[in-house]
Length: 74
Image 1 (spheres, rainbow, N blue to C red):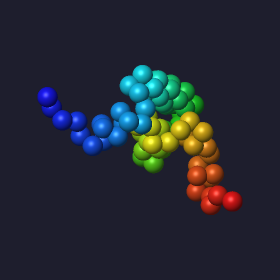
Image 2 (tube, rainbow, N blue to C red):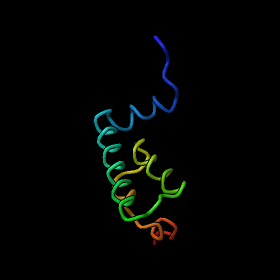
Image 3 (cartoon, rainbow, N blue to C red):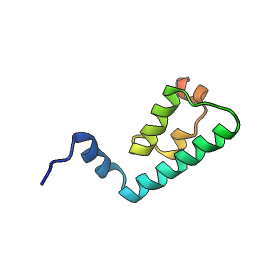
């Protein structure tokens, strides 16, 4: 049996495959939605979305405005 890479192992411990699929669908929907508005996502936005898909961050952190992410927390 082939071994999983460390990233795959961490992912399976963090979120289920069904949850990952749901997150991929949500991110793809968001990409399409902003694309219709003529907005292109930056590399940083794509990396942020991938962190959500991978289960590194939750929905609350994912949808925070960029200014909130850069501000120190009180």
